[in-house]
Length: 236
Image 1 (tube, rainbow, N blue to C red):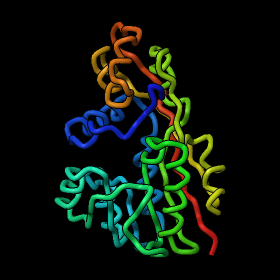
Image 2: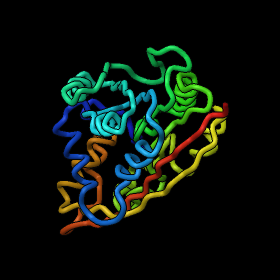
Image 3: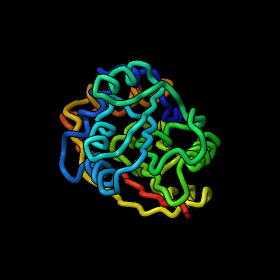
């Protein structure tokens, strides 16, 4: 988004993380996070790795379902919060994972890959394929290139370009031998005012000063959120 989307240091703070998450609780339509949770708990319990676990909400739900969960995150603070929920978590980042090959029945990475460069996405998919057992699954969540198009149209100096968009998920997963089933999830998000929209963007765009050139919002702004939950299966 380039100024392109990056995994920025702001997301190591739970206050900013929760503020970003709160935006998605506004508006209407199906919640992609609930679709993701359903996909994880629909599978038979097994050894599960979550990459980019955040505060551990999904890992905790997976454990309640019977999955044996380990999790990683790039933020020490997020790992601390996940551990407080009883999650076996440690600090680690793709594209390198500290686990032997064929360690897991299922790996989950939700809204993680699209923060990476093209090369990092390729390496990360190979690494996820390495740690998942033959016949296992990889569950991913990402956004569409058209996600919040109404908001990004107000910021002509930044282009919303994802390295792992929903539109390319099947193609990229096929490169590691996985067959993907994609569930598209759409709804709306309501930014209550100009200030909230600008703060949301500042946490994603680099340099953050690019947001100063955004066309002002008068009143509230309703935008369309477009995400996808991908369940991929590796051959036996």
